[in-house]
Length: 267
Image 1 (cartoon, rainbow, N blue to C red):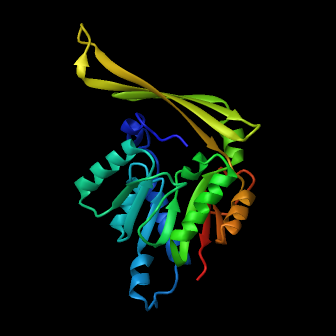
Image 2: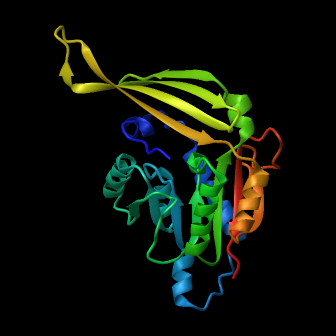
Image 3: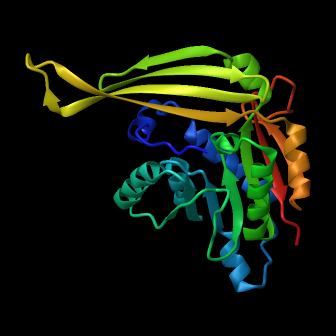
């Protein structure tokens, strides 16, 4: 599970068309739809009910949005570079968010939380069912009784049929990238090699030409099926509640590319 390094510098630039607000609204819908009744008498449980852990929070865009809706947010990511940007956003906004640099396969909290979310295909970076089960068990451990686990994942169909072997390029004024994608059907793993060019504002060429810094990263993700996720949730002791097509918010189909799942730690 490789962490983003140099790519973190331009991550938000190339993700500027990601519908974070729409994702946030739908997460709020799910949190309210499946939340426990308000008549919790234990004060500590009431506090924990309002706390959410964002696993694989990246640069904290969605974490901040949920914080603005009144939730006590904790963000975990294994990339120091991504968290540095998240902390800069936090400082500018003045929001009280706790960020922790941890591997989700080994994360630790000081107490339990009311919900755990993991979106933007963060769980696809776990390349085996064993790693997923480890994370699911940790999630159960840190959820308070009745707490929710809401996550999304990219399907095998998306990696195999929609993306496949392809090259994607995008050119911006101050940065550009080349995304070379390779699908490995033998283990249902998706490999992508990133080549990024970032303008260096501090230097220029002899003729005043612009100088760009070039760096590369390689990352791997694995596609999963809905049946696999349900089985692993059950093995972790979590109760499956719902599966939803992330793009249509309707019924999951064989051609669904990204799926939301909702589970609960029973009281």
